[in-house]
Length: 516
Figure 1 (cartoon, helix red, strand yellow):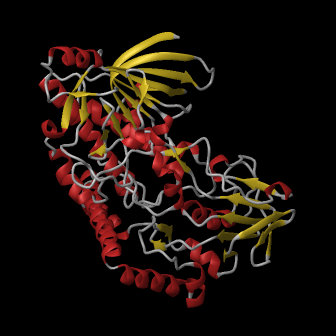
Figure 2: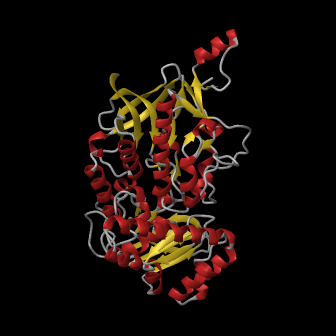
Figure 3: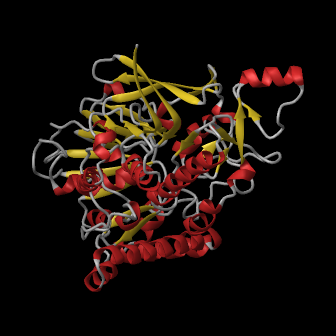
């Protein structure tokens, strides 16, 4: 291996979060050296990877976008290419692109407590060659999805299917769905986006320009879906009377207040929330039985993430008959399509398996301390950012009930605060330390299947602050950055120091040994 550079901070991932982290590092910690390691050949993360028809955000861009860069597009729910351009513009405007190392995947990370530094093994995803680099602090902004391996639902008899089978994560550039019968399996954000988009025409690649002949959304169970305006009329009025920067902050505050209030309403008055959502859907579709059968889940709103459809586009294509929603289970694939447990056969030229992603902690990084792997499932997350058992390490975990970037930016700023505190106190390595026993809770408190399948491999949250991962930006924005670091961050004692203390008996009780 060839020895590479040393930097103060390594950020893993050059997506929306990684670029935001880089901005905070260089503006709030000027002079800090950093590098952004990106496994792909371009920046953008999710918005560079996913190319299926209609790919878009399901959070408004005034809150999903950066607080320091106004969103100028008129669409509140933006498409993937627009978001990708926005991330690229941000990276270029602030010189962040010069710090990105593309095709660089972190395949090993070991913290040396004696040296107080990370040694990273970085693989070139093009050549396969490996190199090492070191850093004082490691910050994972790679999200928590496995982008290489989507969830495999083990569809029965799929090998007998004579048509084309596609997963949205790996959408073929030359796929032509024009004039074809398409079945989309799933009922989450990807499925509700794909159904109307496939009917508009275009395949997401270079394939035909006509729309599909008919699209069926096949779901096992319904999902809560809410129609929202594609353009925020109030935001447009605000932008007409205020300068761009001020307008962005006012609109952002407005949208944060609304999303927080609506989430709290759903949590505290679930029956009223159910009535509200089913009422809105019935008003649009004009068919109460259709809503009861296919758009009324058994769980309460926001027990799983709520799907937004701009301008009610999904409801529109169902209402006019170009699309159908079928709630049933797959008995088996057959050459002409899918046989359901009810006996019905859905004939399909193309089947899209929008069956969800798999969770993967920290982009697949398995942190080691002094050569020993840390069992993530035994650790607790502090302030939604750092983790017990792993010194000088932070992770970016966004909200599940609001825009990811809101929580991400708080974490970026908290990391810079920790770095400043370490410099001020002279500490080279720190780790979060509970002041008593914590009652464990799942890190992501969602009933969704994709969460429940994998969450056991993740670190946990506790039962009190600062070990709770709250889903409330208003509270977090007030409390997170006011955390008393000296109370919950402990200096790290190397193993060698621990062995010496065992003999002399004079070790400081305030220091924590990790990696043992």
